[in-house]
Image 1 (tube, helix red, strand yellow):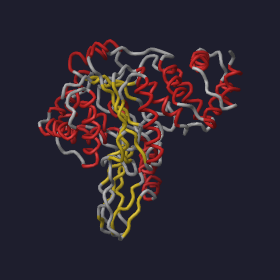
Image 2: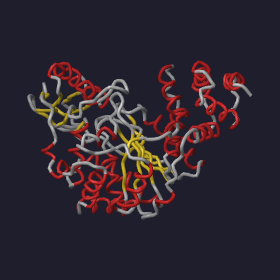
Image 3: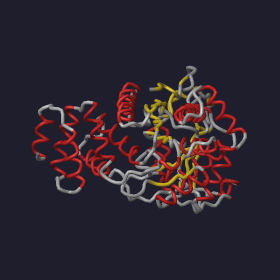
Image 4: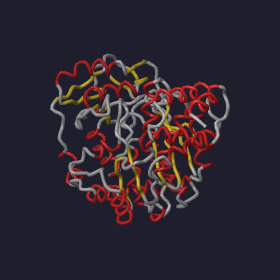
Length: 432
C-alpha cells in the first residue's frame, strides 16, 4: 500500500483498514510521509468522518507510536482528564483527595496554551516544585506517598503531537474523531487502567454546545471500552470561569483554600461528581451519593490538604507557601473593575475572561512564550449575583502596567448585567 492509496480511499468515503491506519501513523511519525500528504488525508477525514472502528484504530495506533507507560505495579490507576477551560483547577484539588482516599494518582498534565490554563504551569508557580521527574521517580513517588503530578514527559504519543500541530494549521481542529483520538491516545499511552473525562462545554470550552460535548463523550467512552479502559464522561459547564481565580499563582491560592474547606460551590459540584465516579471505577464504592460524602469528609478533615502538602514537599516545593499563601509574590500592578450599573450578573463569558488573563501575562499565545505566574483575574461576583453601581466585580493583576487599560476593556466586554433575576449556572450537564 502507499499513502496515495490511503488518501484516495478516504477521499472516496471508504472505511480505512487497521493496517492502512497503522501504516499512515508509523510512516508519518518516522518522517517518511510529507506534511502535505498527511494534510490531504486529515482533510479527507475531516470532511468524510470516521467509523467507530476507524477512530479506535487511529487512537491505538497513535498511543502505540511511542512509549506506553506500564503502571500495573501501582494498582488500579484511575486517570482524570479535562478537555480544558478557564479557571479549571479541579485536578489540583481532586487528585490529592483521591490519593488520601486510597486511589493511586499517577498523573501527567499539560501546559496552558491560549486562554486555557495548564496544570503544570500552576504547579510551577509553587517555588521549587519540580514537574520534570523521570518515569522511575514518578512511579516511586506514587508507591511512597500515593501521588505524583508531573508534566507530560518522554516519548508519549508522538504521532498525536505531529497531527495536532498539523490540524491547527489547516483548520481541521473541530473534528470529533480527530479530537477523540487525540485525547484518548494520550490517556492510553499514559498507562491508566480506567479514565474519568471532564468534558467541558460552553463559552470557555473547546466544545461550545452541549450536543457536541455529548457526541464527543460518547465517542471517547466507546474508544475507552474498545481499548479495555473503562471510561466515564461527565459533561460540565464552562460558560463562566470555574471558581473565582484565573491565573497560575492566583489559582494555587484558591486550591489551597478549597482543600482547607473554603471551596466555592461551582468547584465543589465538579470535584464531588468527578471524584465520586473515580471512586466507583476504583471499586472504592458503588453508591455515588455515599462517595460524595467520603469526599466531603476528606475535605473537612483536611486529609486532602495534608496530602497536597506531602505532594509539594516530595517534589521539591517549598511548603511554607502552602501553609501561608500570603508568602506568594503578588503582581506589581492591579486594577479593580467596577459595575457601571446595578442589577444581576447575567454573563461572565469564560473565553473573554481567559483571553483577558492571557493578555495580562497569565497565558501563552505561542508554545515558547514565557508566562507571568502572578498575572490574572480574581472575580468578586459570579453569574446570578446582584451588584450595585460602582461595586467591584473583579480585580486584574499584571506586572506590566501598560496592559491594564486594554485588559479592562476586554474584561468589561465579557460582562452582562440585567435587571432580571438570574439563576446560578448548573455545573453538571450530563453523565455518559
